Length: 448
Image 1: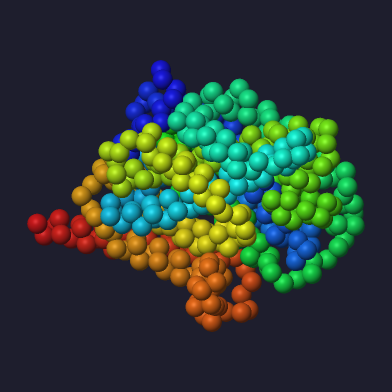
Image 2: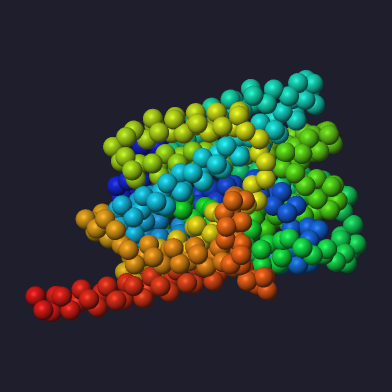
Protein backbone atom coordinates (compact mmCIF):
# COMPACT_ATOMS: atom_id res chain seq x y z
CA UNK A 1 0.00 0.00 0.00
CA UNK A 2 1.25 3.48 -0.84
CA UNK A 3 1.93 5.40 2.37
CA UNK A 4 2.43 8.78 0.71
CA UNK A 5 -1.16 9.86 0.08
CA UNK A 6 -0.99 13.64 -0.36
CA UNK A 7 -3.48 13.68 -3.21
CA UNK A 8 -6.51 12.25 -1.44
CA UNK A 9 -8.95 15.11 -1.70
CA UNK A 10 -12.47 15.85 -0.55
CA UNK A 11 -14.09 12.45 -1.07
CA UNK A 12 -14.48 10.09 1.94
CA UNK A 13 -11.31 8.13 2.64
CA UNK A 14 -11.75 4.44 1.68
CA UNK A 15 -11.22 1.63 4.16
CA UNK A 16 -7.86 0.63 2.65
CA UNK A 17 -6.38 4.01 3.70
CA UNK A 18 -7.84 4.06 7.21
CA UNK A 19 -4.60 2.80 8.72
CA UNK A 20 -3.53 5.21 11.49
CA UNK A 21 -3.77 3.53 14.90
CA UNK A 22 -4.49 5.16 18.24
CA UNK A 23 -0.74 5.23 18.90
CA UNK A 24 -0.14 6.90 15.54
CA UNK A 25 -2.70 9.57 16.43
CA UNK A 26 -1.11 10.09 19.84
CA UNK A 27 2.33 10.53 18.25
CA UNK A 28 0.94 12.91 15.64
CA UNK A 29 -0.90 15.20 18.05
CA UNK A 30 1.76 14.96 20.72
CA UNK A 31 4.36 16.20 18.25
CA UNK A 32 2.08 18.91 16.86
CA UNK A 33 1.42 20.29 20.35
CA UNK A 34 5.09 21.03 21.12
CA UNK A 35 6.30 24.35 19.74
CA UNK A 36 8.46 27.26 20.77
CA UNK A 37 5.40 29.42 20.07
CA UNK A 38 3.31 27.37 22.51
CA UNK A 39 6.06 27.42 25.15
CA UNK A 40 6.19 31.19 25.11
CA UNK A 41 2.42 31.41 25.73
CA UNK A 42 3.47 30.93 29.36
CA UNK A 43 5.25 34.28 29.19
CA UNK A 44 1.90 35.94 28.49
CA UNK A 45 0.39 34.67 31.76
CA UNK A 46 2.96 35.94 34.26
CA UNK A 47 3.55 38.15 36.16
CA UNK A 48 -0.10 39.25 35.85
CA UNK A 49 -1.13 35.92 37.39
CA UNK A 50 0.55 34.10 40.24
CA UNK A 51 2.26 30.81 39.39
CA UNK A 52 -0.59 28.90 41.04
CA UNK A 53 -3.32 30.74 39.12
CA UNK A 54 -1.39 30.52 35.84
CA UNK A 55 -0.99 26.75 36.19
CA UNK A 56 -4.68 26.39 37.06
CA UNK A 57 -5.62 28.44 33.98
CA UNK A 58 -3.42 26.18 31.84
CA UNK A 59 -5.05 23.01 33.17
CA UNK A 60 -8.62 24.37 32.84
CA UNK A 61 -7.98 25.72 29.34
CA UNK A 62 -6.18 22.57 28.23
CA UNK A 63 -8.97 20.30 29.48
CA UNK A 64 -11.66 22.36 27.74
CA UNK A 65 -9.66 22.78 24.54
CA UNK A 66 -8.61 19.15 24.29
CA UNK A 67 -12.12 17.84 24.90
CA UNK A 68 -13.16 19.90 21.87
CA UNK A 69 -10.14 18.70 19.89
CA UNK A 70 -10.90 15.07 20.76
CA UNK A 71 -14.50 15.48 19.60
CA UNK A 72 -13.31 17.14 16.39
CA UNK A 73 -10.98 14.21 15.80
CA UNK A 74 -13.82 11.74 16.43
CA UNK A 75 -16.16 13.49 13.99
CA UNK A 76 -13.41 13.53 11.37
CA UNK A 77 -12.84 9.80 11.79
CA UNK A 78 -16.59 9.27 11.53
CA UNK A 79 -17.20 11.29 8.37
CA UNK A 80 -13.84 10.50 6.66
CA UNK A 81 -13.65 13.88 4.93
CA UNK A 82 -11.47 16.97 5.51
CA UNK A 83 -12.46 19.50 8.14
CA UNK A 84 -13.71 22.23 5.84
CA UNK A 85 -15.66 19.78 3.69
CA UNK A 86 -17.18 18.45 6.92
CA UNK A 87 -18.70 21.89 7.56
CA UNK A 88 -20.94 21.45 4.52
CA UNK A 89 -23.15 19.29 6.75
CA UNK A 90 -24.19 22.01 9.24
CA UNK A 91 -23.66 25.10 7.04
CA UNK A 92 -24.38 23.96 3.47
CA UNK A 93 -21.87 23.88 0.63
CA UNK A 94 -21.72 27.64 0.03
CA UNK A 95 -22.08 28.27 3.76
CA UNK A 96 -18.86 26.32 4.37
CA UNK A 97 -16.86 28.72 2.19
CA UNK A 98 -16.66 31.48 4.82
CA UNK A 99 -15.03 29.30 7.53
CA UNK A 100 -12.87 27.76 4.81
CA UNK A 101 -11.52 31.20 3.95
CA UNK A 102 -10.86 31.92 7.63
CA UNK A 103 -9.13 28.58 8.04
CA UNK A 104 -6.91 29.20 5.03
CA UNK A 105 -5.97 32.58 6.50
CA UNK A 106 -5.19 31.12 9.93
CA UNK A 107 -3.14 28.27 8.48
CA UNK A 108 -1.06 30.55 6.30
CA UNK A 109 -0.54 32.77 9.35
CA UNK A 110 0.57 29.84 11.48
CA UNK A 111 2.82 28.50 8.69
CA UNK A 112 4.49 31.89 8.48
CA UNK A 113 4.91 32.16 12.27
CA UNK A 114 6.40 28.68 12.43
CA UNK A 115 8.90 29.31 9.65
CA UNK A 116 9.95 32.58 11.31
CA UNK A 117 10.60 30.92 14.66
CA UNK A 118 12.38 27.97 12.98
CA UNK A 119 14.68 30.33 11.08
CA UNK A 120 15.27 32.31 14.29
CA UNK A 121 16.30 29.15 16.16
CA UNK A 122 18.49 27.93 13.31
CA UNK A 123 20.01 31.41 13.04
CA UNK A 124 20.89 31.34 16.74
CA UNK A 125 22.70 28.04 16.21
CA UNK A 126 24.45 29.34 13.12
CA UNK A 127 25.52 32.51 14.92
CA UNK A 128 27.00 30.46 17.73
CA UNK A 129 28.89 28.13 15.39
CA UNK A 130 29.81 30.31 12.42
CA UNK A 131 29.15 33.88 13.62
CA UNK A 132 26.63 34.22 10.81
CA UNK A 133 22.87 34.05 11.26
CA UNK A 134 21.69 33.51 7.71
CA UNK A 135 17.99 33.61 8.67
CA UNK A 136 16.99 34.00 5.03
CA UNK A 137 18.83 30.80 4.13
CA UNK A 138 17.26 28.87 7.01
CA UNK A 139 13.82 30.18 6.08
CA UNK A 140 14.25 28.83 2.56
CA UNK A 141 15.69 25.52 3.80
CA UNK A 142 12.92 24.82 6.30
CA UNK A 143 10.29 26.06 3.89
CA UNK A 144 11.55 23.37 1.50
CA UNK A 145 11.53 20.75 4.30
CA UNK A 146 7.94 21.65 5.21
CA UNK A 147 6.98 21.32 1.55
CA UNK A 148 8.61 17.88 1.38
CA UNK A 149 6.76 16.71 4.51
CA UNK A 150 3.52 18.01 3.04
CA UNK A 151 4.10 15.93 -0.07
CA UNK A 152 4.33 12.81 2.13
CA UNK A 153 0.76 13.27 3.38
CA UNK A 154 -0.43 12.28 6.88
CA UNK A 155 0.24 8.55 6.59
CA UNK A 156 3.76 8.91 5.26
CA UNK A 157 4.47 11.73 7.70
CA UNK A 158 3.55 9.61 10.73
CA UNK A 159 5.12 6.35 9.58
CA UNK A 160 8.27 7.60 7.88
CA UNK A 161 9.07 10.66 10.00
CA UNK A 162 7.45 10.63 13.44
CA UNK A 163 7.87 6.93 14.25
CA UNK A 164 11.49 6.74 13.09
CA UNK A 165 12.99 10.03 14.20
CA UNK A 166 11.00 13.06 15.23
CA UNK A 167 9.28 11.75 18.36
CA UNK A 168 12.59 10.75 19.97
CA UNK A 169 14.14 14.11 19.15
CA UNK A 170 11.10 15.81 20.64
CA UNK A 171 11.35 13.96 23.97
CA UNK A 172 15.05 14.75 24.23
CA UNK A 173 14.59 18.45 23.51
CA UNK A 174 11.69 18.88 25.93
CA UNK A 175 13.48 17.01 28.70
CA UNK A 176 16.53 19.22 28.36
CA UNK A 177 14.56 22.47 28.16
CA UNK A 178 12.75 21.45 31.36
CA UNK A 179 16.09 20.82 33.09
CA UNK A 180 17.43 24.12 31.72
CA UNK A 181 14.48 26.02 33.23
CA UNK A 182 14.30 24.19 36.58
CA UNK A 183 18.05 24.46 37.21
CA UNK A 184 17.62 28.21 37.69
CA UNK A 185 14.19 28.08 39.31
CA UNK A 186 13.37 28.87 42.93
CA UNK A 187 10.06 27.05 42.94
CA UNK A 188 9.07 27.89 46.51
CA UNK A 189 9.66 31.61 45.96
CA UNK A 190 7.84 31.52 42.63
CA UNK A 191 4.86 29.75 44.22
CA UNK A 192 4.62 32.28 47.04
CA UNK A 193 4.87 35.30 44.74
CA UNK A 194 1.43 36.91 44.13
CA UNK A 195 0.25 38.00 40.73
CA UNK A 196 0.49 41.69 39.82
CA UNK A 197 -2.97 41.79 38.28
CA UNK A 198 -4.03 43.45 35.04
CA UNK A 199 -4.02 41.71 31.68
CA UNK A 200 -4.64 38.84 31.32
CA UNK A 201 -7.23 38.00 33.93
CA UNK A 202 -7.71 34.37 34.92
CA UNK A 203 -10.56 33.97 32.42
CA UNK A 204 -8.55 35.59 29.63
CA UNK A 205 -5.66 33.24 30.41
CA UNK A 206 -8.03 30.28 30.08
CA UNK A 207 -9.22 31.67 26.73
CA UNK A 208 -5.63 32.04 25.54
CA UNK A 209 -4.91 28.37 26.25
CA UNK A 210 -8.21 27.27 24.71
CA UNK A 211 -7.46 29.38 21.63
CA UNK A 212 -4.07 27.73 21.16
CA UNK A 213 -5.71 24.28 21.20
CA UNK A 214 -8.94 25.08 19.37
CA UNK A 215 -6.99 26.53 16.44
CA UNK A 216 -6.36 22.85 15.56
CA UNK A 217 -10.02 21.75 15.61
CA UNK A 218 -10.72 22.91 12.02
CA UNK A 219 -7.71 20.81 10.92
CA UNK A 220 -8.37 17.68 12.97
CA UNK A 221 -10.44 15.83 10.38
CA UNK A 222 -7.75 16.39 7.73
CA UNK A 223 -5.69 13.78 9.60
CA UNK A 224 -8.16 11.65 11.55
CA UNK A 225 -10.05 10.73 8.39
CA UNK A 226 -7.17 8.25 7.93
CA UNK A 227 -7.70 6.73 11.42
CA UNK A 228 -8.74 3.12 11.94
CA UNK A 229 -11.36 3.94 14.56
CA UNK A 230 -13.24 6.87 15.99
CA UNK A 231 -12.15 5.97 19.52
CA UNK A 232 -8.45 5.83 18.63
CA UNK A 233 -8.67 9.15 16.82
CA UNK A 234 -10.45 10.89 19.69
CA UNK A 235 -8.20 9.57 22.46
CA UNK A 236 -5.06 10.05 20.40
CA UNK A 237 -5.86 13.69 19.68
CA UNK A 238 -7.37 14.64 23.05
CA UNK A 239 -4.80 12.94 25.28
CA UNK A 240 -1.85 13.24 22.89
CA UNK A 241 -2.26 17.00 22.67
CA UNK A 242 -3.22 17.58 26.33
CA UNK A 243 -0.09 16.40 28.14
CA UNK A 244 2.46 18.28 26.00
CA UNK A 245 0.28 21.43 26.07
CA UNK A 246 0.33 21.56 29.87
CA UNK A 247 4.04 20.72 29.84
CA UNK A 248 4.95 23.34 27.20
CA UNK A 249 3.02 26.28 28.62
CA UNK A 250 4.02 25.43 32.20
CA UNK A 251 7.63 25.26 31.01
CA UNK A 252 7.18 28.67 29.42
CA UNK A 253 6.16 30.12 32.79
CA UNK A 254 9.30 28.73 34.44
CA UNK A 255 11.49 30.04 31.61
CA UNK A 256 10.20 33.59 31.98
CA UNK A 257 10.41 33.51 35.79
CA UNK A 258 13.81 31.82 36.03
CA UNK A 259 15.55 32.94 32.84
CA UNK A 260 13.77 36.20 32.08
CA UNK A 261 12.99 35.12 28.51
CA UNK A 262 9.53 36.25 27.43
CA UNK A 263 9.90 36.53 23.66
CA UNK A 264 9.62 33.57 21.29
CA UNK A 265 12.38 35.01 19.10
CA UNK A 266 14.72 35.51 22.11
CA UNK A 267 14.34 31.96 23.44
CA UNK A 268 16.54 30.17 20.84
CA UNK A 269 19.47 32.52 21.43
CA UNK A 270 19.15 32.11 25.21
CA UNK A 271 19.24 28.32 24.90
CA UNK A 272 22.11 28.37 22.39
CA UNK A 273 24.19 30.51 24.75
CA UNK A 274 24.23 27.63 27.25
CA UNK A 275 26.24 25.50 24.79
CA UNK A 276 26.88 21.77 25.13
CA UNK A 277 23.77 19.63 25.47
CA UNK A 278 21.59 22.73 25.13
CA UNK A 279 22.91 23.06 21.62
CA UNK A 280 21.76 19.56 20.68
CA UNK A 281 18.37 20.17 22.31
CA UNK A 282 17.89 23.34 20.28
CA UNK A 283 18.78 21.50 17.09
CA UNK A 284 16.18 18.83 17.92
CA UNK A 285 13.39 21.28 18.71
CA UNK A 286 14.22 23.37 15.63
CA UNK A 287 13.79 20.35 13.38
CA UNK A 288 10.67 19.35 15.30
CA UNK A 289 9.18 22.80 14.69
CA UNK A 290 8.97 22.01 10.98
CA UNK A 291 6.19 19.51 11.76
CA UNK A 292 3.81 22.33 12.63
CA UNK A 293 4.61 24.14 9.40
CA UNK A 294 3.94 20.86 7.55
CA UNK A 295 0.53 20.46 9.19
CA UNK A 296 -0.52 24.03 8.42
CA UNK A 297 0.69 23.87 4.82
CA UNK A 298 -0.97 20.50 4.19
CA UNK A 299 -4.26 21.61 5.75
CA UNK A 300 -4.26 24.87 3.81
CA UNK A 301 -4.02 22.88 0.59
CA UNK A 302 -6.76 20.47 1.70
CA UNK A 303 -8.99 23.38 2.76
CA UNK A 304 -8.52 25.09 -0.61
CA UNK A 305 -9.84 21.93 -2.23
CA UNK A 306 -13.21 22.69 -0.66
CA UNK A 307 -13.30 25.58 -3.16
CA UNK A 308 -11.55 23.84 -6.06
CA UNK A 309 -11.80 20.06 -5.52
CA UNK A 310 -10.35 19.21 -8.93
CA UNK A 311 -7.16 21.21 -8.50
CA UNK A 312 -4.05 19.12 -7.82
CA UNK A 313 -3.27 18.85 -4.11
CA UNK A 314 0.44 18.60 -4.90
CA UNK A 315 0.25 21.89 -6.77
CA UNK A 316 -1.63 23.54 -3.89
CA UNK A 317 0.94 22.30 -1.34
CA UNK A 318 3.69 23.77 -3.50
CA UNK A 319 1.93 27.13 -3.87
CA UNK A 320 1.08 27.40 -0.17
CA UNK A 321 4.66 26.50 0.80
CA UNK A 322 5.95 29.24 -1.48
CA UNK A 323 3.55 31.84 -0.05
CA UNK A 324 4.33 30.97 3.59
CA UNK A 325 8.08 31.00 2.91
CA UNK A 326 7.82 34.35 1.16
CA UNK A 327 5.84 35.88 4.03
CA UNK A 328 8.34 34.48 6.55
CA UNK A 329 11.14 36.21 4.63
CA UNK A 330 9.27 39.51 4.60
CA UNK A 331 7.67 39.69 8.06
CA UNK A 332 8.67 39.68 11.72
CA UNK A 333 6.93 37.48 14.28
CA UNK A 334 5.52 40.37 16.27
CA UNK A 335 2.81 39.84 18.85
CA UNK A 336 0.57 36.88 17.98
CA UNK A 337 -1.41 36.98 21.23
CA UNK A 338 -4.43 38.73 19.67
CA UNK A 339 -4.16 36.34 16.74
CA UNK A 340 -4.84 33.44 19.13
CA UNK A 341 -7.76 35.20 20.78
CA UNK A 342 -9.29 36.13 17.44
CA UNK A 343 -9.04 32.52 16.25
CA UNK A 344 -10.87 31.40 19.37
CA UNK A 345 -13.68 33.86 18.83
CA UNK A 346 -14.27 32.43 15.32
CA UNK A 347 -13.66 28.74 15.78
CA UNK A 348 -15.01 28.00 19.27
CA UNK A 349 -18.64 28.86 18.38
CA UNK A 350 -18.21 27.34 14.91
CA UNK A 351 -17.28 24.08 16.55
CA UNK A 352 -20.34 24.37 18.80
CA UNK A 353 -22.44 24.47 15.62
CA UNK A 354 -20.71 21.39 14.19
CA UNK A 355 -21.03 19.30 17.36
CA UNK A 356 -24.71 20.14 17.80
CA UNK A 357 -25.51 19.29 14.18
CA UNK A 358 -23.54 16.03 14.37
CA UNK A 359 -25.33 14.97 17.56
CA UNK A 360 -28.69 15.79 15.98
CA UNK A 361 -27.80 13.25 13.27
CA UNK A 362 -27.38 10.59 15.98
CA UNK A 363 -23.61 11.17 16.17
CA UNK A 364 -22.97 9.87 12.67
CA UNK A 365 -22.42 11.69 9.39
CA UNK A 366 -22.98 9.82 6.14
CA UNK A 367 -21.85 10.97 2.71
CA UNK A 368 -25.41 12.22 2.15
CA UNK A 369 -25.11 14.57 5.14
CA UNK A 370 -21.95 16.13 3.71
CA UNK A 371 -22.49 15.99 -0.05
CA UNK A 372 -25.98 17.27 -0.79
CA UNK A 373 -27.64 20.01 -2.80
CA UNK A 374 -28.18 22.41 0.11
CA UNK A 375 -26.21 25.61 -0.47
CA UNK A 376 -26.98 27.49 2.77
CA UNK A 377 -28.22 26.55 6.22
CA UNK A 378 -29.04 29.97 7.59
CA UNK A 379 -30.05 28.77 11.06
CA UNK A 380 -26.61 27.31 11.71
CA UNK A 381 -24.90 30.37 10.23
CA UNK A 382 -26.97 32.59 12.54
CA UNK A 383 -26.02 30.43 15.54
CA UNK A 384 -22.34 30.82 14.63
CA UNK A 385 -22.75 34.60 14.31
CA UNK A 386 -24.45 34.83 17.72
CA UNK A 387 -21.67 32.78 19.31
CA UNK A 388 -19.02 34.99 17.73
CA UNK A 389 -20.87 38.12 18.87
CA UNK A 390 -21.15 36.81 22.44
CA UNK A 391 -17.41 36.06 22.52
CA UNK A 392 -16.60 39.57 21.31
CA UNK A 393 -19.06 41.11 23.77
CA UNK A 394 -17.46 39.32 26.70
CA UNK A 395 -13.87 39.76 25.47
CA UNK A 396 -13.29 42.03 22.43
CA UNK A 397 -10.27 40.68 20.52
CA UNK A 398 -8.65 41.28 17.17
CA UNK A 399 -7.02 44.18 15.34
CA UNK A 400 -6.96 47.54 17.14
CA UNK A 401 -9.57 49.11 14.87
CA UNK A 402 -12.00 46.27 15.65
CA UNK A 403 -11.51 46.29 19.40
CA UNK A 404 -11.97 50.06 19.47
CA UNK A 405 -15.22 49.60 17.58
CA UNK A 406 -16.70 46.95 19.88
CA UNK A 407 -14.97 47.64 23.21
CA UNK A 408 -17.73 49.99 24.37
CA UNK A 409 -20.13 47.01 24.46
CA UNK A 410 -17.90 45.02 26.82
CA UNK A 411 -19.32 44.49 30.33
CA UNK A 412 -16.35 45.63 32.43
CA UNK A 413 -17.20 43.43 35.41
CA UNK A 414 -16.87 40.21 33.42
CA UNK A 415 -13.54 38.40 33.87
CA UNK A 416 -14.45 34.76 33.19
CA UNK A 417 -13.79 32.86 30.01
CA UNK A 418 -15.57 33.96 26.84
CA UNK A 419 -14.92 30.67 25.02
CA UNK A 420 -17.30 28.40 26.91
CA UNK A 421 -20.36 30.74 26.85
CA UNK A 422 -19.90 31.32 23.11
CA UNK A 423 -19.64 27.58 22.48
CA UNK A 424 -22.74 26.91 24.58
CA UNK A 425 -24.77 29.62 22.82
CA UNK A 426 -23.89 28.38 19.33
CA UNK A 427 -24.48 24.76 20.38
CA UNK A 428 -27.92 25.45 21.90
CA UNK A 429 -29.13 27.64 19.03
CA UNK A 430 -28.07 25.06 16.45
CA UNK A 431 -30.02 22.35 18.27
CA UNK A 432 -33.03 24.68 18.41
CA UNK A 433 -32.89 25.56 14.72
CA UNK A 434 -32.31 21.93 13.73
CA UNK A 435 -35.28 20.84 15.86
CA UNK A 436 -37.56 23.44 14.26
CA UNK A 437 -36.34 22.43 10.78
CA UNK A 438 -37.00 18.75 11.46
CA UNK A 439 -40.52 19.43 12.78
CA UNK A 440 -41.30 21.52 9.69
CA UNK A 441 -39.95 18.77 7.41
CA UNK A 442 -42.10 16.11 9.09
CA UNK A 443 -45.20 18.29 8.73
CA UNK A 444 -44.52 18.81 5.03
CA UNK A 445 -44.05 15.06 4.60
CA UNK A 446 -47.31 14.33 6.43
CA UNK A 447 -49.24 16.80 4.27
CA UNK A 448 -47.75 15.52 1.02
